[in-house]
Length: 442
Image 1 (tube, rainbow, N blue to C red):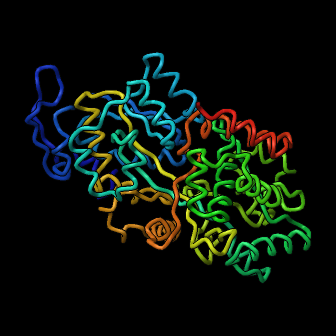
Image 2 (tube, rainbow, N blue to C red; image 1 turned 30 degrees about the horizontal axis):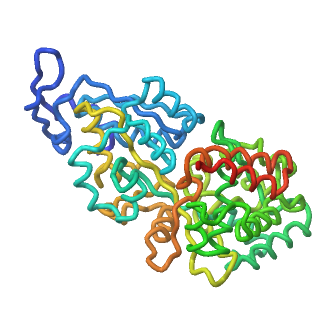
Image 3 (spheres, rainbow, N blue to C red; image 1 turned 180 degrees about the vertical axis):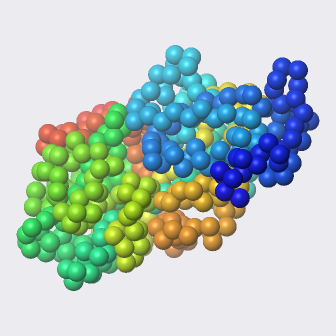
């Protein structure tokens, strides 16, 4: 039943007993369409605050995904999204104004929050739901071996968005190798009229994160998983030859004035263009390609046909080094609690289930769950199908977003700042690498 219809039917469909303070009693019985939410009943009239970096239009589907749960249980989830999430969450926690729940995209930031002593371990039911996730996802939500935050979503970052219609009209083929991708970029640039690449890394206080993805893709696809892992733990430094070489590759690609920033401006305009707006020139034939994650699908206008023969689609970014088998970079989000109130735990429990993940999939394109209990037939969107296949490919060289894994002072701090300066001010690779290395906690 559609949520709107269900909402009209709830008065008749759901019944519950009430306690004298107006809150739903512990023995409340939910019936009809609400019966499936019985495990979370007993907390009507309560409110749970949630803070995250997810903005509209992505946050619209997020809130829609739990609307039936909220209506049936009476637990109001008060959601707030902010471009300044990564800087504001530590401030709020330190000031005694922590949200009940936070959706944290960076394991490094989770570790920083755990060090404050304010993060509450998840309830037993959320822990029991672990068996529906791949073990590696649990490690991303753990700090020093202790599980704190349940995986919420997964996203495929190794994608290039393009227009199949434009490619077909121009006679271009989707490149299968890095050499082919660079050759196509050069061919488009020399043809004149438009440039091959567009990009934007502006994102509030998180400005710079798309540039970290470009570097991570090149490190993983060029150097392989072992060097990537050593880079994450700083055994391999930014100033070391493997990462320096990767930065030169990124510069040849996304700082090439003949190749970027199509339909927007020069190389420096990448720093001031929001990541949400970066792909717009593809729809007006001013840009040919955008490297962005699967969740970028939510940024296309609702009338855009996203399909292999549509207005836009995506192909997997090829490996820089053909010897690296199918490199796949992924990201994700994790639900951490700063309160152990029963209604907060009820929301945590629900968000860790395949039932909730399924409800989100049904209302959100460009969103993939880390929960293996989800029926994969629910992924009807072609980008979601492509992403789910890549993220679960046992033959892939999969790694989680490196900057998200690094200490927050680096991955969600100095690296964002320095890579932004790299694009906005033309700072040297040596200076950028040295500044990031210097920020690494001792």
